[in-house]
Length: 172
Image (cartoon, rainbow, N blue to C red):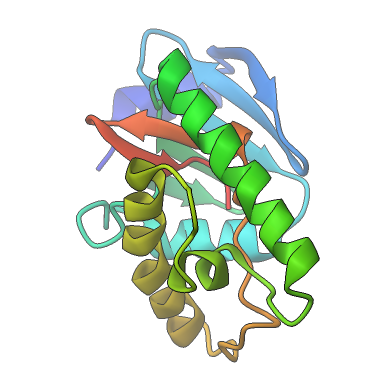
């Protein structure tokens, strides 16, 4: 839960530009370790954010979401990856793309991991294995058919960070 002081800061525009994603602008709330994400696409991002509100234990592979109003939502601020961790995510993604080129019938990062993720960094494989059941659950909740063709998660280095010492998706 957010205290009223944070809501007051948002209502009074006490935040500053932090970053920009594919379909959102991200602002740091003054004096807080919280981000305000303003989405321009009310699709799956906003739908999933609504599901994540105050369920960080249930969806621990995603950055915690504390509040949502329309297409805007507030998340915790994640920590950047170390140089080695970033290298591992980038290398994992390189192997994943090679896998997709060689396996035209495969569609997503979970196929890669479930087929053995040959030579992929173990810490990232472990994270993706933690992520998969949570994504499946989201598809079930929102009555979206879970198929290999449709199973999507925006898994790329810029969307993976750390929170409380664990890898998390900060965008999905």
